[in-house]
Structures are given as C-alpha cells and as structure tokens.
Length: 56
Image (cartoon, one colour):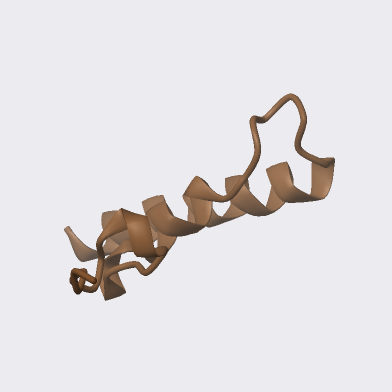
C-alpha cells in the first residue's frame, strides 16, 4: 500500500496551517447546516480575518 504524505486530502489529515480550511471541508452546505454550525464557522472566519489584519 502506498504511503500518503501528511496533508494528503485522501487520508483526512491536515497540515498544521490548514486547520481552518480542513474544518470548513467538513461543514455541510450552508442551507443544510444547523444554525449553530453556521454561526461557529462565521465566527471562525471573523477571527481569522482579524488575526490576519493584526499580523499585516
């Protein structure tokens, strides 16, 4: 069996810097997601935007 590298999408692992993207990959389509999941994801996006703004 071929050994896949860390971060290969097929084995479900994410690179350390990919956690936001990786979490979003598991969120269902917005129209089927429960409101709490949508709110959580939008809070994560807002936090990421603020973090990037502070770093630049």
